[in-house]
Length: 347
Image 1: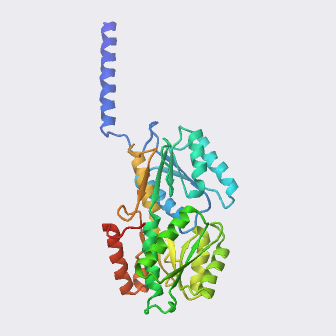
Image 2 (image 1 turned 180 degrees about the vertical axis):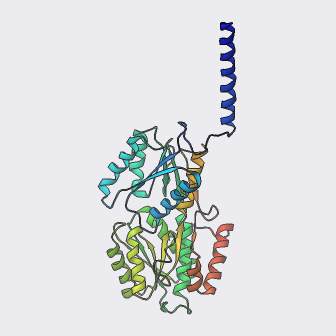
Image 3 (image 1 turned 180 degrees about the horizontal axis):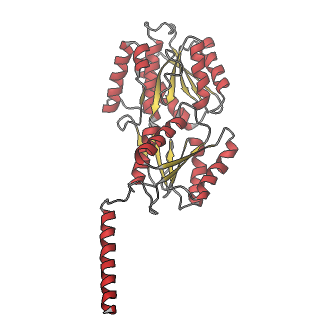
């Protein structure tokens, strides 16, 4: 009897385990946002700078905050500060800890470091934004078509500089561009900006300056004031990260206009910052974490998000509607529609 009872117990236990396994596989009580240890997904976010830039870094953080609220993941953010020599060590400290199911990091300045760490720590996963990285099996990267977005910003600037409705627009057809560094990704913004301006009016002149880094706001302001006061620019496109806050300040103090970048910066200097070229980093990061939680994020690949995918655009909030003449709003909407349809192609 004891032997028969033992066999029966083992049989019941086996059936119970099978049924339990089926229940979990079919979405029983297991939370979608848990890892293979049954724990909540843990995401690390390394900022190669500081939060408070009203741009890239804050936008990525907003996407992660949303992931915490809606997906139930946990997020640890580390700010690397402005000393670039600290960044590789800071990121490696997060990676080597093995605490995270994925680490979010971005910007062109961290590309080589991230690739190096991904190769040295092949079990760790990375979600990388604003650059293309392919064929590294533990990195998923997402890039935004800044050239498309900057085309629309350039068209907008050309419409402003030729406007007779805006009191801050002078008769000269001159628009400005202040970039953080003279590097390929910033020049990609510039190329799109120049094409957009030429599409509206080939006579519009684009002048450009570079801060030399992405943190020196006083230098950004100095360069912008020189464009406004000495070179007759009446609107400047800020593509300088935190240094660009100085560009926006210069626009306000000179009684001129500016265009924000990466996230909606219209409220920083209302009426002077007329619009902002958006890279919707927040949406892309939330989407990536959501796909990760479902086991559907394609590591080893890159996605490029443009107008069609909602990756870029112009900020058309209440401030935009208040300060931008309706005639310019209508023309911008027409150009945007043609970009989406493919009638306008950015080179």
